[in-house]
Length: 310
Picture 1 (cartoon, rainbow, N blue to C red):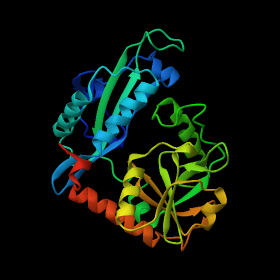
Picture 2 (picture 1 turned 90 degrees about the vertical axis):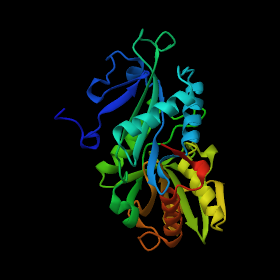
Picture 3 (picture 1 turned 180 degrees about the vertical axis):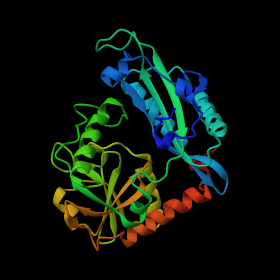
């Protein structure tokens, strides 16, 4: 299609409800339940061109989180993890993808409209495409300018924050639109108590006096899989890691270093918050070491238990 977004140029097929279909034929009805009520769950996953060949990064954890998210919303995924694993690896192979992004999604499809989705069928789709640095290649080296959003992250007492749900991402969309509309590359979202939660699609890390801090799960954050990776790698590198921190807005401005982590963002330094320069206004030394170690891991394809060969 001539109007296809650039990121999807060259993508031939999508796996949908058990079949490989042409990209342009992967469509749903306008009265799909998830379109109206946000009743879907999804994952963002990367595969890398490693020294061991193309491999999916921490795929088992992503599949576990997909099924756990579905359980929270009573979405009975009609395929096993093994079936989705096989379909995903075949799709990557069919697309000839060495490295890129993987999007599994399960959602309530076309059926009776109304808040109770249980009479609607559960549909599942898998898509893969090439995708470089989420915030841009320059961002990985130079960092990004961010702003604290006026929109707060919802609390786990309102909507489960441990589930990656389509509907809840309107919260992230609002924060991101606000930041970009004001000339910033990304946002930081506070929780209802006014403490730091995370970015719209990333977890946040702070470095102070050579120690690494990240907001705890009770701060209304998603338990990010790249976040877990950073915690493990930083500890192995000898850093003291505080993975259950409460971080105030003011602490952002006086941090030695800040960086985002996420499947899409990978490890992205933050050079300023609300026009306050962080550290020297460049990628800090601790961020640089952790980022370098992360990319070394995904280039080597080690440790084995983190990678699923395609």
